[in-house]
Image (cartoon, rainbow, N blue to C red; front, top):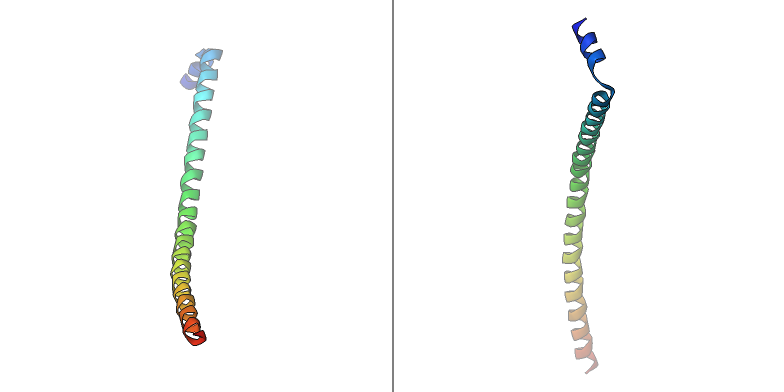
Length: 79
């Protein structure tokens, strides 16, 4: 019965302020949860993409060296 009298004793303004504060806290908790969840997922995807990018850069470098070598051989044969 004591809680009922406390709830009834609150003013309308006090109740509105309390509800707004609780809604802001709930929104903040939801936002942070979603942020950390997506950060964890996209961090893994980003690392995989970066690894693929490094492999492709190495492959490009190797292929560029082969092209240069073949061009040099072709020039030698034509001369």
